[in-house]
Image (cartoon, rainbow, N blue to C red; front, side, top):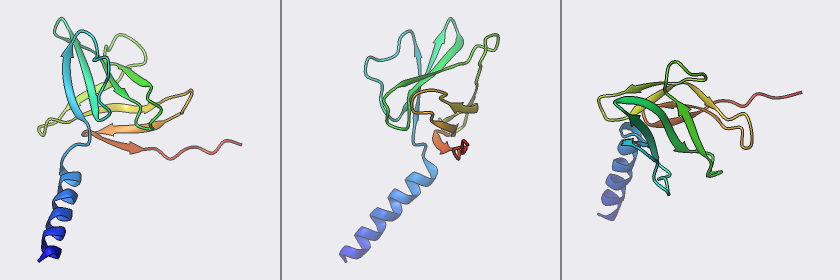
Length: 119
């Protein structure tokens, strides 16, 4: 009987991972929280306009990544909201210094890019 419970628990965890976003989207006005949640992406609105998205780097370096959402400024990312409450960013996010993380943020999930070999 225990194996059935264990199987159902693992199956539930698998379904949640498959269908629920890993990162929750929080739309906020004003400043970021002093201690950002590791599994959250913050979308900052000011005067009704999206200004930027921010999140802790998923590599674990604990740096805050800021992605500009204002179309008139460069670089700029495009935010897409999905019916399940998740968000996507386009293009990919590539940190050029320090940890050099490179990933896509799609429907609340991190999709790592293959690292380029440098000669």
